[in-house]
Length: 580
Image (cartoon, rainbow, N blue to C red; front, side, top):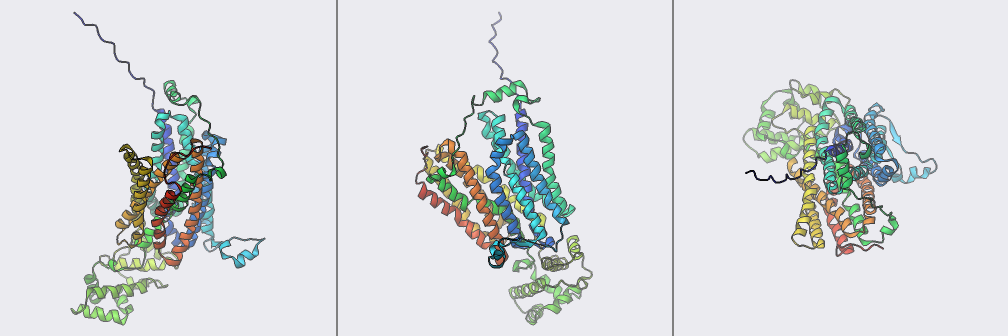
């Protein structure tokens, strides 16, 4: 006898996945945004050599970008509301892509020309107040103006992406989709340092900016082909459109506008702003100056003791070989070094003393304003990069590097090579990969503590404290003896910064009325980027005057702790502020 069959379980409707293609578009727009932003930092070293920039010139360029981005960030959301994302976002991508490519056009400028800012109505400023004047190579000025346009236009990317997520995703999927497109920052930040050196070495710096900037134009083509509003999109199925709309509020809450003057009456806002002033510029510093720090630390022409890898073999070649490089160096050494070298060859003397004497004399030769005579290196197989530099007119930036490279080519196993641009790119990418972990761990830690029954105040502030303390050792980075150790120290600090930032956004949600959250975040972002402009400018000045990043790292090692102390004084207990 047949048993009556039970009714089949209703199958879940297939609603489609086209909305995730839109999320993919946002992911790539953010990745392109970061690639265009970071390219100049990777190429700072070779561009300074080729175009004759000083560290102060570069500081001005990066300061201009940060100031411009502050205003772009501030008004980007307003622009998207006025224009609509369908037209507005591709327009801004086109502008910033053109600005990125415009960096390459600076190669057509006369490298001997100087840009000077004039004050026709305030001539006394040029004569008496140096800080109000601006003089730099014309090429640096060209980069600065391109950078300003880049910063103003890039600031609209994130407000537009948030608006598109709200339009294309149900509430329950918004956090996931936001996390996916925001991951583009990490992908772009890791890919850029790896790809840019390769493009530069094979195609030149101008083409590098054309290629990286051109990716934005490719994205715009994809945008016009794929994007439309959900209600009018031909590729979006009715079922998926219904699924999106069903998961959204029937009426989107209209956010009340809160003036900045009124916001300043909240103690939590002051805590957030102080953190923006002190800690937020650190991320811009890493983006703009980390490759240059690695280059100056591990790619500087000046020798350190560890750069002589085999003092015994080096001494043997110097005393026994009759080749041109050995004869040239022996004739240039000081009597003291010659005496130590002669005694060492006869079995007398200490390797440590010889190493120190050789490094001292070699540095005097390397750093001389005169390039080595190439006849002294006859018979030496020179690498292509050395030949390239020798073929170009020498200047004060390139002479020490050429001298060091000639010695490296002549004594390849005895003198360690400077870190090349590709290696700097890999290490910079490693930093951003480490930093990407921090945002996840920071959010996870505070949530874990809350799940264990900790109070909101304790969970947030303990997480802040751990992040702040993790940054403190960053002042040791300039003293690291190897690249991996320096990147590890800075990477931990960068990871802690991302964890700090994730919890700082949550701090705003924890303490402020809902209608004020966007305004507070906008205010804090503007203050952070605007302050970052001053930090970038002063960083260029400090590095030019001291030749070191030590004081900059010392400054950032304490800013997070000071920010947390200010937060504790202003907001002893994290709790929701009552709306007035």
